[in-house]
Image (cartoon, rainbow over all chains, first blue to last red):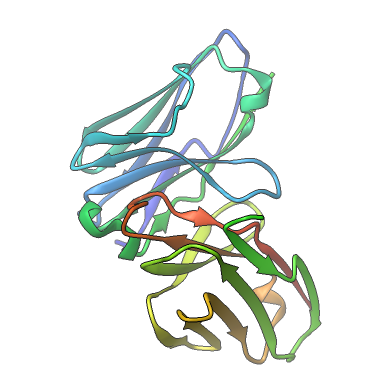
Length: 116
Length: 110
């Protein structure tokens, strides 16, 4: 199984809603990532989990709250989002966080989020 | 000036043509990644290079560390190759933080 599975594929939410994005991989990867991608732009790193611990937070607003309940799962909890947060949210994983710049990244197909 | 620059930004080709996409970077790197993104979002990692050349099917990636330049070649292009191709670089100091190029939109017409 070389897949990273993200759910839901599409999400529409109001600014007062609370929702969660889910990411799952069963490749035994120990690094998991959240990226945000606006249309026609490259992905921007948001968070990195290394061995289930948050290792990088790229100064992301607190309305985005990541969680790594176990080595296979990564969640992104959303609360009080703004319309400018509408984007494609991509999850990725790689084998070994220690040499992560040398590691092939496996991406999910993303969640297209619209905030109204 | 971006640390990672790709050219061209947009490329239209006829089926069967040989295609080259270029990536230049201004920082010292440990590894360079070529990624493919189809409409609808999913990103596929095509290659990770730290030196030399790699080949997979009709795709060839090369890197010249001294010149800080990499190329992605597609031989016998096909409409299914239509996608955005993204170059990303990583370094010892940046660790998990890849620096991405802006991407090249490739359209292959039948």
